[in-house]
Amino acid sequence: MIRGTDRPNVIVFFTDQQRWDTTGLHGNPLDLTPNLDRMARGGTHLYHAFTPQPVCGPARSCVQTGMYATTTGCYRNGIPLPRSATTLAHCFREAGYATGYVGKWHLADGEGPVTEEAQRGGYEHWLASNLLEFTSDAYHTVLYDNDNRPVRLPGYRVDALTDEAVRFIHARQDEPFYLFLSFLEPHHQNHRHDYPAPDGYAERYIGRWLPPDLAALGGSAHPHLGGYCGMVKRLDEALGRLLDALRSLDLLESTVVLFASDHGCHFKTRNSEYKRSPHEASIRVPVALQGPGFDGGGQVRQLVSLLDLPPTLLEAAGLPVPEQMQGRSILPLLRGDRERWPEEVFVQVSESQVGRAVRTRRWKYSIVAPDKDPWVDSGSDRYAEECLYDLQADPYELTNLIGLESHREVCAVMRERLIRRMVHAGERAPTIEAARSRPAGQLRVSSAEARA
Image (tube, rainbow, N blue to C red):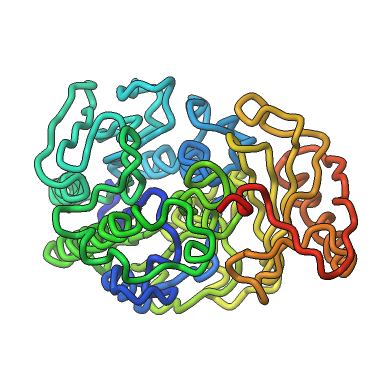
């Protein structure tokens, strides 16, 4: 049996729909994330981290498998993870780790809460709900155990899941373990389109601060941001509790802890709901790691995808990375090997549109297939240009430069970058129709932006 001291334990602390700029790491002034900020300062902070798919199920398929959503087939919600897919749980379990999953899954058949064993991605210990937003509320948490029996947990939902995680760790402290702790917060509560923070938390943040994109575009931010921030605060407190538990069990220095989120939230400013767009508010997420291999790693400024996290965790544990994984470990970056790292990240968008985007340090370029059904079609062979943003001059993407004569050359370069990344992801090279030319001085916004 592999002992816990021979290989690090691994915990993934995974939030849902959390913007990168909710954190002090990225300049948020509300002191929402002191534990995460401290963890990142002492460990490794991935400053430019992005989801490859800004919607729950597809993003989670990417994190579990290290493959694009179009590769696994989970390009939209409601499509189960293929039973043949090799997940992180399979890799750790084969290496002798105890594996556990707690919280939201969103990778099983249909809309029901129960997940049959064959659709659990290889996790042994199971206390989860396929769609936690429909089987629980802020103070009513119901999960399902290994035998698919409902289990009611006490306390605010974040605390209920954290309690279970601590119980899992305590019971397995003498063996190597891998735990995926998957929260619903700060995702909205679907049945009432609200953000239910713990009692008394939302009031702390109402009217105090708005990110510039929300201040400019409005959306649903004004009634919702207080609760959203309250949820983020409680998540950070839960992270602190988890780290305290590891410290008390003398496991802190032998455990890799990853903090990440599946996607962000634009509060109905870019389309009719909360994500599913190529904008920073949807695709940029907070990511930090601590533990063996990551302590003292500092701030990494290269552009990183959630696809890069599965191979990173496996390499950190000394385990082989499956060849089919389409991301790459970030550990070479921490060793100074940065020459071969990609200069852009690639994003696929579904459900609201059949879209694709590529993002460099300075530029964001996106395309859309207007004749395709985003619920039925995973991709297209024909697209039209949608957006071009200069993130250096316009970091909150308020001015769409697509079609401007002054930026034709930039579009041409970004178009080639995007096609190259689509092919690398396993898609066919598409035809992309250039946007109609506009003279300099004419600015263009999308219809959603115009309505805001």
